[in-house]
Image (cartoon, rainbow, N blue to C red; front, side):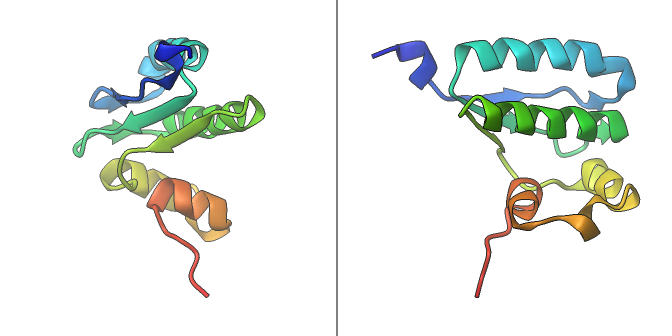
Length: 109
């Protein structure tokens, strides 16, 4: 059994989640994809995010799915991240998978 790939811990992100920090965050996520099968992102409650952060996370979701890895948020999007999702029109276009990822909403029938 490959122990490092089974180990799961949240990746704590910084408070600044903008285009200025995108390169550093991209590198961090890339490293995690190489060493883990499950990647859990923890966004600080007062984090300031912009659209580049949402785009990076969406890209990471697609990469994880293509590689058969689990990628999720430790808690539902809130604060600045939620506002970016709303302003950019993402929320109104969410499918069930998007709502589960970003808002932790389960499908109910």
